[in-house]
Amino acid sequence: MAQPSTRQGLIDYCLRKLGYPVLEINVDDDQIDDLVDDAIQYFNERHFDGMERVYLKHKLTPEEKNIVRTGVTTTSATTNVGITSISYEESNNFIQLPDSVIGVFNVFKSDANTISSGLFNIKYQLFLNDLYYYGALDLLNYAMVKTHLEDISRIITPDVQLRFNKKQHRLYLDIDWAMVNSNSYIIIDCFRFVDPSDFPKVYNDWWLKKYLTSLIKRQWGINMSKFQGVQLPGGITLNGRQLYDDAVLELEKLEEQLHNEYELPPMDMIG
Image (cartoon, rainbow, N blue to C red; front, top):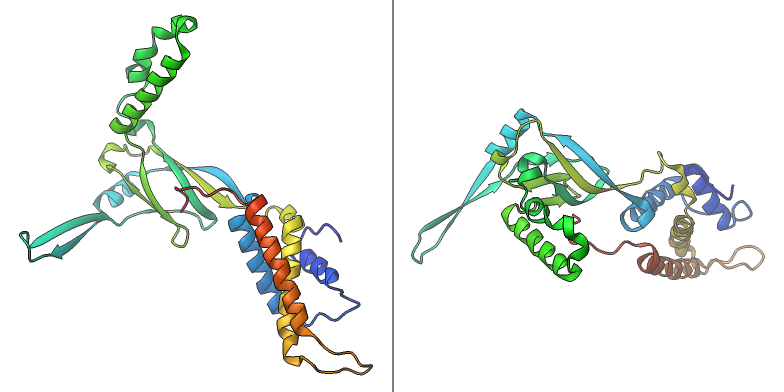
């Protein structure tokens, strides 16, 4: 089937591209399964269609709040100059995220974390009367003042500082938990990989099909390289090294295409 919708369908497609069943593809089934996992992992981590941006809402219970507030590790350092001992405190409690999350972009503060909101918000009060005369305002001055007030707002109520590593799936929030009310919500702006078992169209991605075919071809060349120079009946000579070299060149071109055309630009806050 030219449009695979299952894992096995993708494998069969790639094998046909390599010449099966006319040719015998000397690659073990377990090796092919490993290559499929590698290709999908690379697709999820690099291809813009391999991940999706989602907003996860988590309700902070009183029990969780007490745990994260008390989980502090103290580290001491000694010196021979002046002060003999210095202590540092670090929060070692975290929110465990699902394994499907591969990066956290931002964490939105709930209303309980905002010093002033609604009618008491500083920007609302300053622009309350000005908006009635919006047509008479200089747009450049309006934009400059608005930007300046947003900078002040970030200083007064700074954004949540976070730490996240996709190998741990732990979200550390370096905030004053005393300012967070129990049963309030934390909105996590994050990236989650697209699972092919839930969205079978991933198996029919053009780039993924090409990439997996080249991976299997490279493994085929590795397996056949030990028979280099062996002459078969009829004068045919095995050339596993040529298979391997061709596959490596194909993979380099596909990876370069992925970086140039399909990869999302790097973002500082993605773990």
